[in-house]
Image (cartoon, rainbow over all chains, first blue to last red; front, side, top):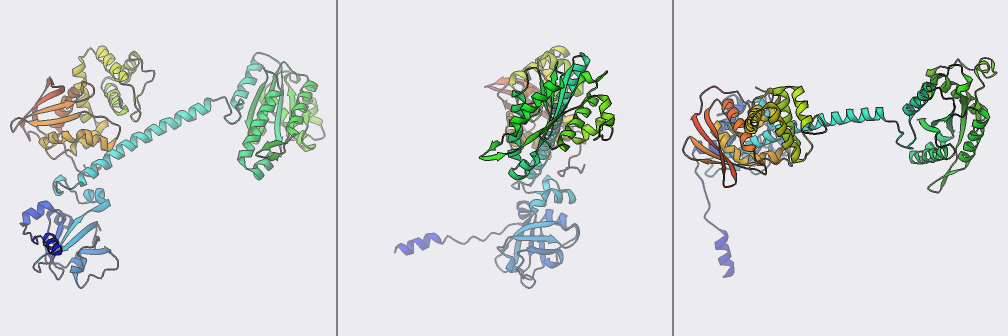
Amino acid sequence: MAENAASSVAQPPKAVFEVPAEGLDRLMPMYLWLSPEGVVRGVGPTLRKVLREEPRGRPLRELFQLRRPRDLNWQGDVLQLAGARLHLQLVSPPFTGFRGLATVLAGRQGLLINMSFGIGVAESVRVHDLTDADFAPTDLTVEMLYLGEAKSAVMQELHALNRRLQLAKATAEEQALTDTLTGLSNRRAMDQAIDRLIGQETDFGLAHLDLDFFKQVNDSLGHAAGDHVLKRVARVLLDETRNGDFVSRVGGDEFVLIFPGLTNLEALGSIAKRIIARLNQPIDYRGQPCRISASIGMTASTLYPNPRADRMLSDADQALYRSKSQGRGRATPHYGPEQRMDGPERRKPPSAQAYSKKT
Amino acid sequence: MHGLVNRSIQSFLRDTYGEELWLRIAHDARLGFENFEAMLGYDDALTEAVLASAAKLLERPHEALLEDLGTYLVSHPNLEPIRRLLRFGGVSFVDFLHSLDDLAERGHLAVPDLELPQFELYPITGTQFLLRCTAPSAGYAHVMVGVLRAMADDYGALALLDYAGIDHGAETITIELLEPSFAAGRPFRLASGAV
């Protein structure tokens, strides 16, 4: 008995609608009505506009290509299309794509397909010059176009903001005087410090330090280990120098130290030796010992009648390379202008370029 | 206040009265910067300070300034995207008026943190309407009078618009449509880039 009651509830009277063509035009302006043989019998006003030529009387396959489902052979029987998610495309330019859903009409009246533009809607609206009135009021296509434009406008603002921020960042970096990794002064700050000392006619000593075996640490233990070593080196350099001295990182593993008022090369040499001795001690990185050393070249402003930053840096660099070529892990002073011309290991005449190229 | 609102005010003042005057306003309002960013948020007090110092320097009533701002938003070529977005509201000026009920939601759709006032349109007769504007801060209705004037022009409609004061907590605007298609109006195509 219960079964009977349930089945009587589950079988409401079957609804068969008769819809006037004008009503259908408004409800789904992109419908297509096909005969059971697949010939177009009727078309909604928007789809009609898109098709450009009169489709009525022509078989569906002359107008559209079925993109999906790919496994459906519909050439013989269009009624097979019913129920599937259809992707159709115009067979002639502009090859507009459509989504569609078909249903079989009662009384052998054929097939009704409702179509929409799917994701390419903005382009279709442009190509076919459609207006608000071409879409059913229930259709959110116009909202989608609105959203597309609103999004573009917002993105444009964001791009502009990003460009301004990037520029501000570049400017800030350009004006920055600190090396972000070690917290030491950077090359810019070092240049300014030397210029300031020369301008004030304050004598000073200068040491150019280059780490030995740093590349090996980087290569074998990775950049994080390398960064760790650089931070440790920075601390050693600050420890081993006086408060008023100036320590800067001017390149990957290169440092310049400036000692205002200290021009005695022997005194500079003993500071350099202390620094090297401390850097020779392995630096622990997550249980791994990182072994580095340092080569140093030194000079002092008193060696020059008219000290110039580029000249001094270049001379310190030359002296540094003598340290390297004599076996690393040592400090070599620059011995004044006359020596550089006739020393046995004379190199190309120094220039500011030679210095900057290296870093 | 959202940066978009502040930026609009800045663009209006700068494009209408010149860069120099804008910089004076920014200085008098003690902004501490020269440009609002459209995609950042700002303290409401800054917006009020800018409007106050602009009204003072230009010797124009606050309300008139806000109305000019509304007209500027729709009619200045630099802000064509705003006009287009508003025109999505409908094919006629009356359609557009009805779409104002959705304006706040549409704004949200585009910029989720943008708080626009809530508008409600009440038809009085076939050609007369009352627009209620509920907003966290007063003044939006004056801007809207300017926007509506410019939009009526845009649609080619002839309409009388008046600020009608505050009623039950909402600012109100009366609208009388004299001629729905008085002039040709400016063209609008759904697809962007195709005029």
